Amino acid sequence: MSKFELKLPQMGESVAEATLTSWLKEVGETIELDEAVFEIATDKVDSEVPSEVEGVLLEKRFEVDDVIKVGETVAVIELNGEAPADETPVEETV
Image (cartoon, rainbow, N blue to C red; front, side, top):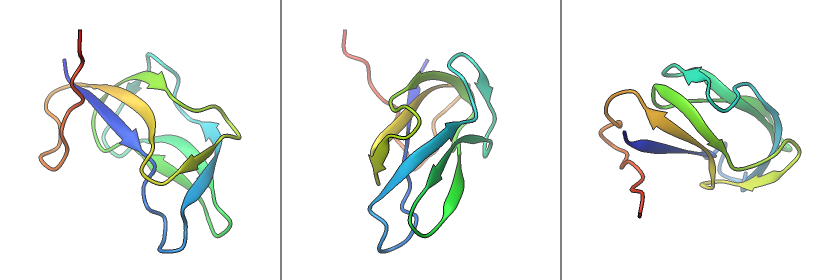
């Protein structure tokens, strides 16, 4: 199966990073399209970050209270089906 890297999205022009405030899903849990996976806080806004794909949460790359830069991979999701057309699945090297 393919994997998808869920990255911290751009939250505004002046926002370069955010603090992870909570995980809403645990490794091994199923995630639906547009379902919130984690919560973040910036100096301007607190927000839930939804999944862009359906699948199973494989990996959390950050812990609560970690500061994450925009564009960094926060979680890895094993896809249930195909990756979105505008995203490339993560290739595993063996």
